Image (cartoon, rainbow, N blue to C red; front, top):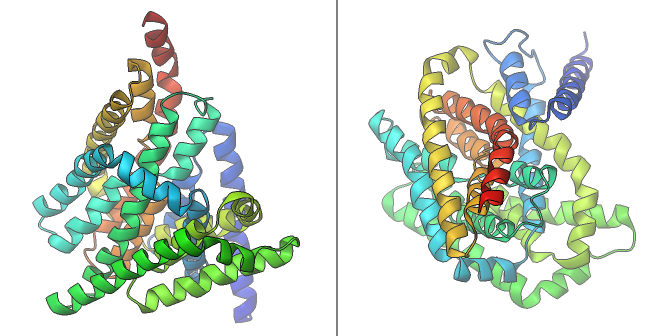
Length: 386
């Protein structure tokens, strides 16, 4: 059979299968991310139906998925919000960082994986899934609650931390010397700082260039600019994902809303492909040996996120029920965690890191929304009693 025909057949089967899985997730009421990861495990090496020729094609789609995920995440905020979040919620954000990055780093060091794997695993356990958390808040009607701004501010703080963390991790994964690494990290942080300053001071000029009354032209400009900056960021040893995230931050207001609406279908398609590709890189046979460890790590992470949410909400003067909701909303893991693990797996940090991260995200991406639904009646009872 012709090579192109095989690619189309395999890719079409994968995308159609993802559609079926997405419909199933909607019916059950969970995030589709765990099902996408399972699909990748099924189609990868050691799976029930390994792909023959389309894996390279899917890997390009996965890279686009990361860029579009981070671009649309950046569109949720603007530079002013990031700076405000950094200054007003710094204490809660630091508590979030310490409590939730520590479990991943500690487990990697205890397993003897080394400092680079420890830094990677710290990121895997630290970041909450903004997408899943936003869906939980919306589905359960928590958007208008008093604790929601606190939850969102922590997510913004995490995103800003990721903008600094990812260049550092990328440099460490590249195995650069201490001097070269320091220079690379300096360049990365300087790039992030310059883009933030440009977004703050000259964002209106960027928006004037991108803005268009025609949706097709607007989509092409936004995606083209994001890919261009992502490529330049990669050349400067900054993650391409961070470059796309910063482009999103530079756009705000109605323009950002219009761009989000146009990008949503593209983002969802390529993000699903990204999760599948991560699954393709993970041998299912390696997950079972680390399943118990992943479950333990997930349990610890649930506790640390509950403590984080309770601490941040208490500082904001929110009652016990709201503190519980804030902690539960922060439990899910998903996009960033897989992005970080994917970078580490691609760099060959440790053969078991991908399996552990996949199992960990599978548990928390599925259990986070489910836990929120299960405990909602108890939280309501607490609120009434108070």
